[in-house]
Amino acid sequence: MVAGEMSEPKTHYLAGLKLFGLQKFEESIAEYRLALEQKPDWAEVLHALATAQSKLGRQDEAIATVNRVIELTPTDPFVFTSLSIFLQRAGKIADAETAAAKARMLAWKEELKKNPNAPPPSTPGPMNVVQ
Image (cartoon, rainbow, N blue to C red; front, top):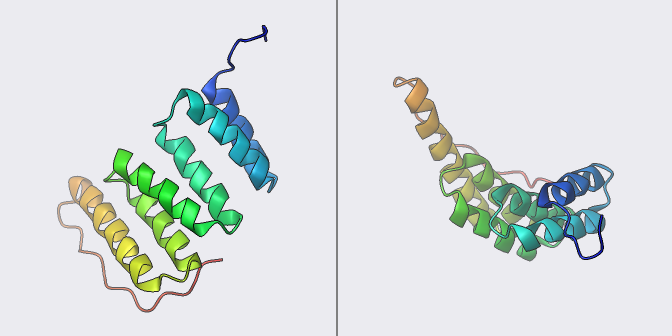
């Protein structure tokens, strides 16, 4: 790379994913942040960043980051599932259950587009904290 030339955000994102897979969460966060410097609204990278933050026990940071992803992709059930997990890890069980219910409802709405007769989501029992 030429001095001063910025590398592609995708390169940093992929490097972050690889480091995450090696459980090098601090290093993965550094790579995700480099990608976000160039593409600050890249929802996939923000979601990966939140997951790495959560793995390091930084639930408040993870929740704040995933809430940014929700602003960018408000109908993605997977993001609400992640929010539920991070809230569980933070001990905020009632909020986690609300996020999980939102994820189920969004997934059901997506399913209705393919299957108009899809049954509504069931009400789950008590949550077990996800590690």
